[in-house]
Length: 337
Ligand SMILES: NC(=O)c1ccc[n+]([C@@H]2O[C@H](COP(=O)([O-])OP(=O)(O)OC[C@H]3O[C@@H](n4cnc5c(N)ncnc54)[C@H](OP(=O)(O)O)[C@@H]3O)[C@@H](O)[C@H]2O)c1
Ligand SMILES: [Zn+2]
Image (cartoon, rainbow, N blue to C red; front, top):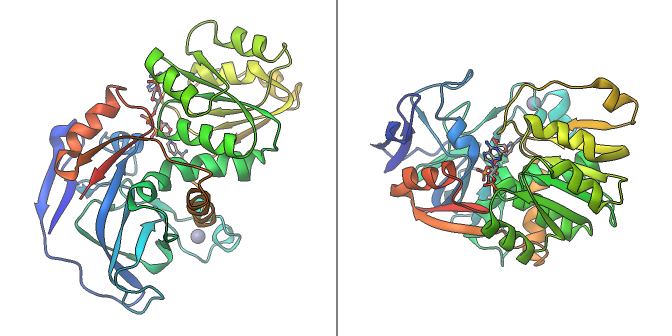
């Protein structure tokens, strides 16, 4: 079988296809035959020489497929499944509270430890979720990193209530589109952002109430659209200077959840802006298995239809990553095994 490896840190030329024997059956583990993967921006960060990343390493964090060998698990051969992408211990304080995404010894598959992009992959049974009958393997592969993080941010961290107004910074990527679709399904008014006209049109088509450009007038425009009160919540998928825009445009008593540093990781903060305005400033790192479970049901009920930008054969994973790096996509890029 083939697996897809980052040989060393670098550009897409460090991606190598490696021939290897199939994984062997083990108690507690399930072997999955891969059907679809998807590209996340973390695949690109994961190619760079950042701390905590071993090389060489099998990459890929989003995968759906069929159970090939259930071993001693509850699954059956042929079950359609999706993988939860965080390795977790199951026994620490946070795991016991159902927050596997804050496990004390967590590791993101594909980034901190070998990931999922192989024709057959062996994973702990506790990382496997069965798909509802009517959920496709394509849609399932779009959910684990981008949609689960957006869901955790909006539902578990912000605790969004219907009728509220949400600003999304970085609205055209996988996580930004996920936040838009989840917020609309939860009954919010959504102001989202992009750098491109063609992406703005698509964001309107899939439900955005307002789409703003990421320019120097952004804060002013958000305040104009909210009668100068500011938005109830901000989902910050950009970081950098945009986080200051978030703090300027959230209403008194509002909430900001940051989940990215695409536009920079270190910023200057005016603490007065946070405490004097009673702001909840939150972080989100992936989501829980329960979040992914809930999302599968939302897709099954037709409340969310993941936005698929394009589908590449897994052999062209380098081209798929370049499409993302050049910002030519909107929503999720899929990979077909
Ligand atoms: N905390 C977590 O657990 C978690 C989970 C998932 C993702 N993330 C992070 O969230 C970010 C988005 O992930 P993704 O997979 O959705 O990526 P993506 O699909 O590539 O989306 C990123 C979007 O950000 C905008 N963008 C890119 N570079 C920018 C820049 N330098 N300045 C301003 N805007 C820029 C682009 O929108 P336009 O083209 O419209 O400008 C792009 O569509 C990444 O940094 C990723 O690592 C974090
Ligand atoms: Zn744990």
